[in-house]
Image (cartoon, rainbow, N blue to C red; front, side):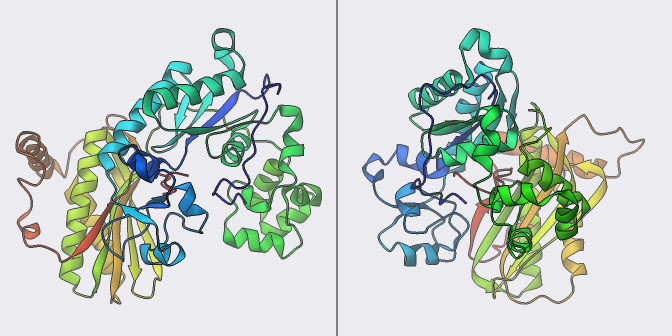
Length: 423
């Protein structure tokens, strides 16, 4: 697995034949941290961590100097500062990330109509049809990197390959600020020395299952044979891993889907046991998620509750509803029902609400009646007031009383999700 600190960076020279590598994966480098550093150029060469203003916050992003100390996204800020005591902590600014993401995505759209957005900071591009106008895939990749830098002062890394998952691996190995081309006839040469963790869909449990059988590289998986691999990890997973290990990925670049989920979560300054405080926080988050859905023109079908207890045990529970929604009241009723159905809770450190299975509003099937009509009118009215007087000028009465000290972390959809933020 890549160390994610740039120490094992791999890039292509200008002479590489990229004619068969028509799928690009473009990933902005340490996106959130890089955006924050645009206003703090004095910190560019120092370790920087993006996180909320609390030792109980979770790291949103870390720049490459910080990563050399083992700091990475999603670890507690307290742990990050133990690893790198001299790191500078900067607060996150979601509106900045949205602004720069839109500028970068507009550059991609200029290159090809076949752009598949993956959250806020990465995308797949199919440039097969752009070669006559813009040059080879490698030339297009270099042009993208140059334009991103010239127009935003940010850097990005580009992987070019004949299939999507290889392009994504390549962009990761090119970080930071690099281009790596994997021609079709060199796909297996590139893949087979890599660790099995690089295969799409291999998490910690599957990796352990594979390595316990002596399968440490992708080449080992390819050489095992399909029947034995299916006995090791199951029929469906075995077939998928066998295909990937042999460089086969039938997925096409699919434009039009920008967000896979929308969510909010908070880490409390002090662990919470009061159920009413937690329910009020669920209501606040459900309302915030609904606002984001309506602003983006999305509706969602799956509501997810996330809880992290004081011992760092984390659980998620989800429920799929009959009709997709963008209403805070519907989201709250579902997530509260999930919460109440879990019974007694230990002290809660973090709580979050997420909506998944998003689709564009208007694509949902029409219903003969709308059980949420009154709430729909009410929330539309709230949106109108917010547009004129600001968000928070009108809200449920139960949210007027503060829910206690907490650190708010709004998820940016991806959702890298991951989310994987700003590699």
